[in-house]
Length: 131
Image 1 (cartoon, one colour):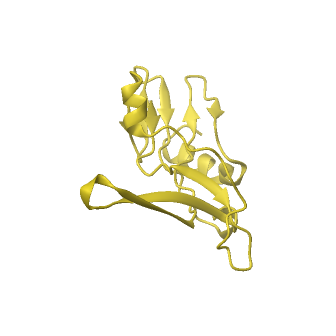
Image 2 (cartoon, rainbow, N blue to C red):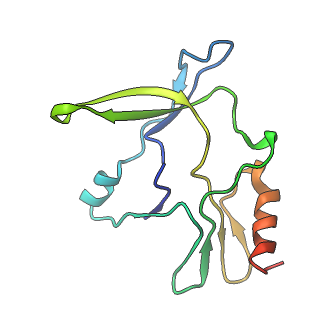
Image 3 (cartoon, rainbow, N blue to C red):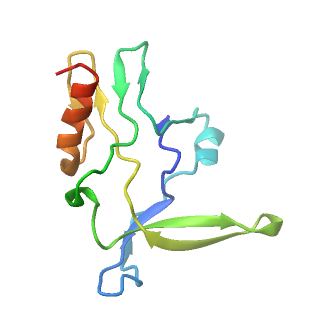
């Protein structure tokens, strides 16, 4: 499984004006360890790279270059800090969505892009010499 190394455990919404009370959250994603325990192979990539024998390009992290792309103002992510003795302490922090990416298949089809990042996808595609 190709994953961003900074993938959150879970995401939620904590509306303003204080942004400190989470009113809803999606269920946690499987951890990297859980994926491996289930027989999966985890490959962590923040940068662009080719897979499937060079026939598919995965962008890596999409740069957020405009204020329009900062994400949902009330978005939060759950993180955990390791403590002595193997315990962990978790907390919600403001979300900067860094784990969205796009894929480019052999014909030039672009998939899995959030709507706020299409311009950056086109810029990256141009930089790759594909446009």
